[in-house]
Length: 215
Image 1: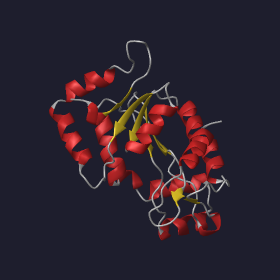
Image 2: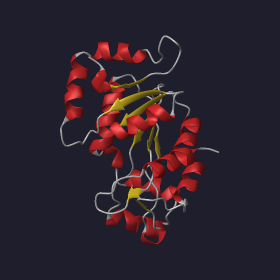
Image 3: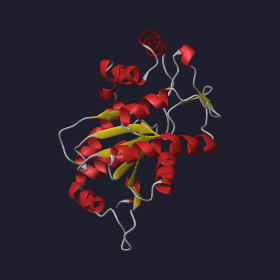
């Protein structure tokens, strides 16, 4: 199985877990799994929490072209989503830190929350991680995970002890934490690169570290 085959299985998931919205008849499907090809060698995985609300134009696109994984990838490319603030800021930051290769953009949970300000139940996250994210990591075969936001960092740090996990503040968060850390990194980039080059502790275990912890 490759990422495309897993992605196709993903968009046809019919579990309808608690707290999420998945309605193919309305063009609301699991999404946000995209592999971005780049020329560098150092691959990385970027894991967010879950997709935001699917807007009307995106829903109509899936209904017109078919709610398939191909449609998810084509919409991402045609709408230039890779240039939106979330992707652009994270890509720039991890490139500064030496990860200049392919990026697997993904989420803990691939379905959007149900309701206006839904909260993902822990059980829903557990199921989706084990059903999809764990397999994505095996297929993509990159050792470093950049986990976006505290919830994603905690889940990835605990779920994937065989990966080096780096916590990153959400780039569009309300408190500007991402911007502050970015400025701090750029002022002392060699120091951050040196710290992050040590991916294991003295006992040979992979480390989980948040960028905010590095001084």
